Image (cartoon, rainbow, N blue to C red):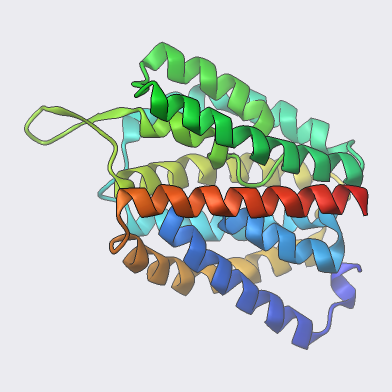
Length: 258
């Protein structure tokens, strides 16, 4: 269904969905974008859902960056940004030419693959150096241009990343540092993707405004999600992400074959 044919009631429902998915996003640092894309897929199809979700996530990630502005590891953000940007441009350009079936298969496959990557990193107690993070970011950028929610794949490398405390000591990123740093990284990624989408037929003026309206609805959801995040343990946080990964993988494979 074209965006300009949506009723006000349906748009209001989509904004409520954006709020709910933002609560999840704020509490986990991931998954909210994929959940919103899944909802939009039922209305406008998966190929149009990705650009709309990308627009919404610019505002969503901006609000989350502000909420976690004191927790962001800026050195990690800069390193990933430099190495990932060329791949994001290339990956987004590839996405424009993909069929809706291929897009759904790519989304489902990347979610499934993210699970063993996280398990492998956790079992090895992975600590990520600058060269390793730079190499991973280059590959991640190409994937990020094609899918929503690429944080699932980048997460193990961020969780193995060390930051410096005010006392000069080295420690692994905390939950709040992880969420804030990932939000900042993905904000930059989505800005690049919107620039590419806006030069194609996938994102017109109506789509841009709907995406921004959905993004505004995510702001209170992110605030509520942050408060839930502070109440979660590290273990509960990891289990919640894994459960959502399995469910969303099944959903996108269903979209590919139906």
